[in-house]
Length: 215
Image 1 (tube, helix red, strand yellow):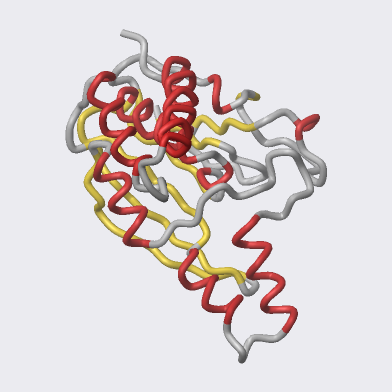
Image 2 (cartoon, helix red, strand yellow):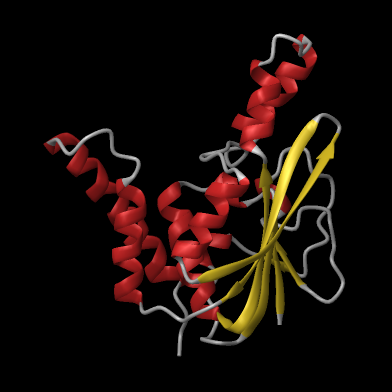
């Protein structure tokens, strides 16, 4: 079983194409999805999935939810199963946005690509990824990066990581990994920042409880 999550209007043969219903979209005119669902409500049996694939979806979720997704997908995937995640190239796009040689149009498109198109409640971006940061992120969650593809389209720049499940990790260990990852985003270890981390971890726990595989 191969899953194409957040398929939009792009139908991939050989995959279960899953997306929000049209009522959650503002500009999309038709649905090609095999299944209509909120991606945050999906759950599959342990070791039942061969591939999880997303194109310009992952960046629409908070860091805590992204951690819960990587943990959950790891639990769904067979050993050696694949994740394919395409996101905006934050580094390349940021250079365009900041370059004195870029036109106003080029800068504006770059800013949109960084922060999202913002025409729907979900059409905002919560995180910027580079080839290095995305590779390190998935590695922490039990995946081995097999390759990075780069592409551009109409003045936007993107990266796609292809990674395989290298090891199964317990739910308890994923919590420790997530706490370690999220702590990198603290500015210091003051009480207010510790409370911030705890809030993020609670968000992670709520999501991973929904996503982590059933036996």
